[in-house]
Image 1 (cartoon, rainbow, N blue to C red):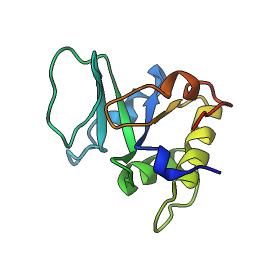
Image 2 (cartoon, rainbow, N blue to C red):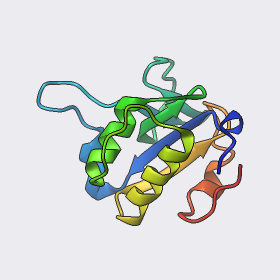
Image 3 (cartoon, rainbow, N blue to C red):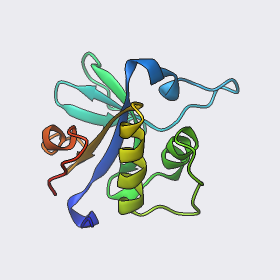
Length: 129
């Protein structure tokens, strides 16, 4: 399905009704997040936030690696079984199911701080990789 060498990151931007997905839980933990700035997306792990943040997303894959915590969160939200490990194809399927249910938008990034593929990827049925 997908050549993971061409995908540096996969994020999921929750719709307005599902912003609670990116908030901290009762115990204070939060899912891995990416924030969008004027120069592109930055992972919460990078701590390189500069400028005004425009939106936040759950990180499902970053820096060419899958992020299980983010994938587990989205799986639970769409009533799918949590996997021991995720492939990029698994993440795309989970993300598309979440899009179909109206939870938000899946975005595929060709570089961690780039949204060059995001325009095509914001359409629920088209991914150009």
